Length: 103
Figure 1 (cartoon, helix red, strand yellow):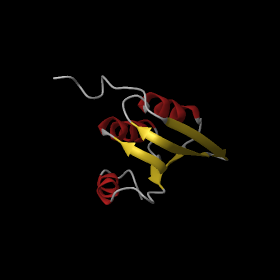
Figure 2 (cartoon, one colour):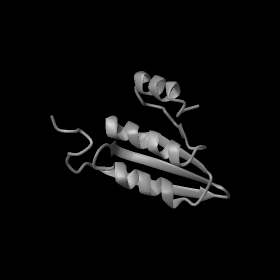
Figure 3 (cartoon, one colour):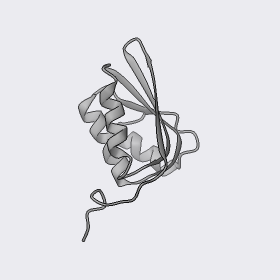
Figure 4 (cartoon, helix red, strand yellow):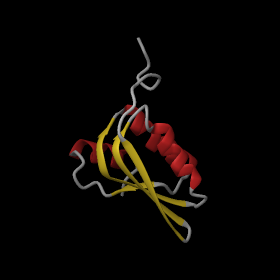
């Protein structure tokens, strides 16, 4: 059986980073999946700040590799959190809160 995080196809994805003193807001749009996970993590690591907020408001889709990317970002940047869950499915928000990734 193939590992879902090992294969995939290119998807539409965009990252915008807004930096202020000590904080980076990373706004995602499109699909956060196996193809876009590396770009998302690179954006989180590029901030050079201690406080990272991930804005999911523009996401249309997120698979298990997207979830694992959020967890990886949290492990690398303990203050990282998720916000702007508007339009996201209730089960996604519940899962993110259960994993202590969202406020």
